[in-house]
Length: 212
Image 1: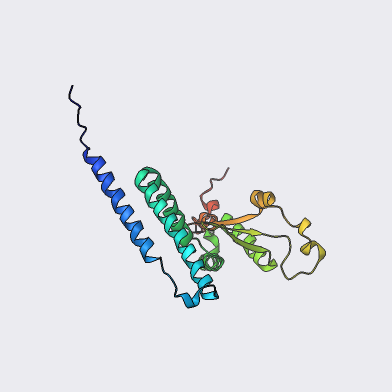
Image 2 (image 1 turned 30 degrees about the horizontal axis):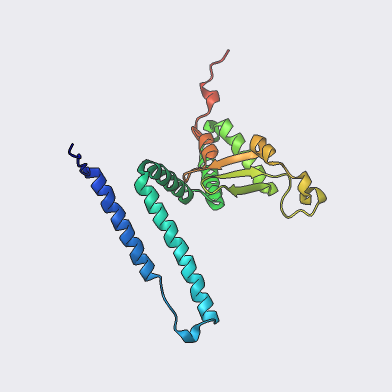
């Protein structure tokens, strides 16, 4: 009985070629980062420094090769991770800072100031007055989470030396801040609550209300 010869498929040949390239790339990196000092530097601080950097580069090389191997073996997983990291990077780059919030607030106040009082939206006016009050009291705080930011209000200004203002146990908790102290949320170069309250800022809803 003749033994059947199994021929490698097209995709298996591609995988073998990729594995060979990866092995060759690892060999070239190994040769690149292998360096031997002259004997006169043996057991000196130069030898220890070179050994440290060689070990560090070897660890990075092995981590890079493992990453390339994992990407080649699990392309779908690598695509998901790459998309998530890319999205997080873009969100971090477009995360608005505290200066942008103050600039946007000043722009909103100017837009309302140059609007006739008879057509100003009362909801917008009330919202901006609260923000102005918090700013005058010095209780506005900014915190960045990397990919988005929040603006919230504290109990006291930072310059106060009162015991209530300095004691950590009397400061607002994270739960309290999330429930009732968030003033605005910044994401993708936009302050969402401020922009939401500025919609139709020049429309007085009382003008369109029907008399009873």
